[in-house]
Image (cartoon, rainbow, N blue to C red; front, side, top):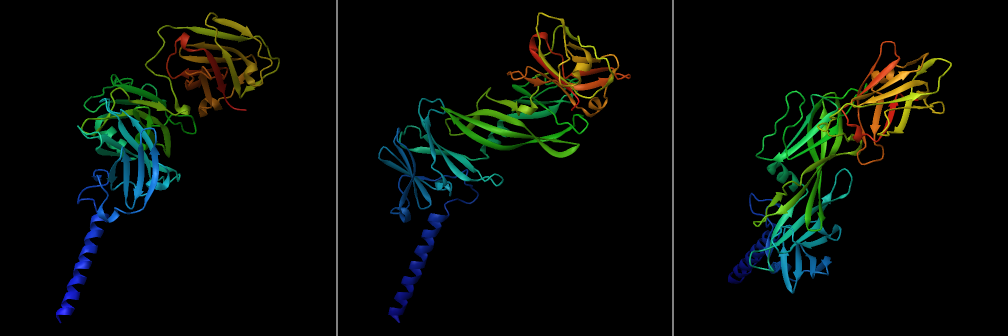
Length: 423
């Protein structure tokens, strides 16, 4: 009987040891804590993994860093010292991690950032990454505090520190206005135009149009995907912005917010002051509505070609460079491929462009009604913008006026490409 009790006691002890080992190595997260908030650091591997096979994940040979995977942990090796970390990405070996070693917090001491795969984008299947910032502990050169920057960390940092507002101008529904400032700041707007009167950074974008060319009403907006990039000793973030409208379920990929991130002495992320800006996607770029013409100006181009027949101008397309020293000239439109050859004159001023039909011709009213018109300035240049806003046709259909989205100074217009209607 004593022999049987000895065997039973030994079995109970063995089960207890196995159970305890599993809890220690597999459940290191404390109650109420998440992966983002809890990263374990030890100077030696856990006993159960001390002799586990190591796989080299990647290295920074220039600075002597090597990163291994061992069981459920990763091991950083540097200058003969080893540091074991738990709760890092489970798919960290999907792709070799990248190493960045620089002074990211301007404290005179370099930090190590390791970029590693954290998963896949459910829509594109592309890898999603997170950053592990290893900041030397105060007074120690070979021991680190670890800060995890996950794919959603930018949202908490940005929303917690920055005020961001997207609105539609009252004076011109074509233009959306994106304003950013410190969280404590109050942004004010002109009651008549809707233009922001303050803000650390203000950017602009073009609203969506319906099938008749009418600019739709902004309903709201949201931030979508965000990514981090390392540029030298700077951490940069890019965040996609999506706009929604009352009249449609179609969403607009409006552009991106860009801002820099810095690491504080207590290992927190903060937005770098004056690093924020918004940039609209190329097809939604618009000119700054606050930069308007201070003086009136005009230019007239006359057509020397006199057509002998009559008809309807359905598609008039024309482009030319603007000579700032000339205010009127005459050119032969006869060889032009579109109906612009039947336009008697083109008159341009700071606020719009007017087309006058040749004798015997009238304009089709459809382009004006359906928003099928455009005026682009400075084509191919850095300050290229599509500047048309509304169009109006005279009762006798002989004159079309395309109004701009604001007034433009003479010096700001180098070339013009106009389009009224389609083939």
